[in-house]
Length: 135
Image (cartoon, rainbow, N blue to C red; front, side, top):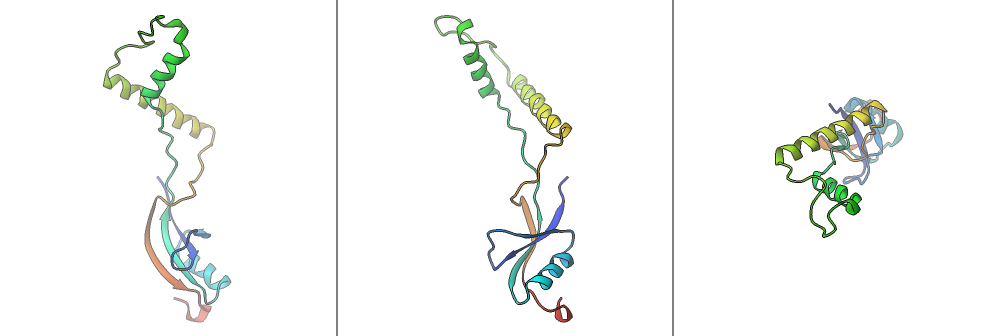
């Protein structure tokens, strides 16, 4: 499960949200007020999600398998290494390989946090202000 966190970016339509992540709106507002008095920011609660590791494709696999074994196949170019795979068998192979890829990434601690947001909510404009008048 991914985590919702708070970020802020400079201006009305920021290209980047360089402030954050913070666990609460109050934390991101405190940083803005401390360092950027009078500046306009967009504040957003965002979820960065995770990278998709489920990329194995059976069509490509079977093409690569045939190509790697081209010298072993019928000289007329007929035949395949594996013939007549059912849709259920293809789905099963894709799931097994994709599950193995995800397990390998997890086992070796290779999962990174994406740069871009997957989802956002609670977006607002905020002008940094002195502590005594801050929201």
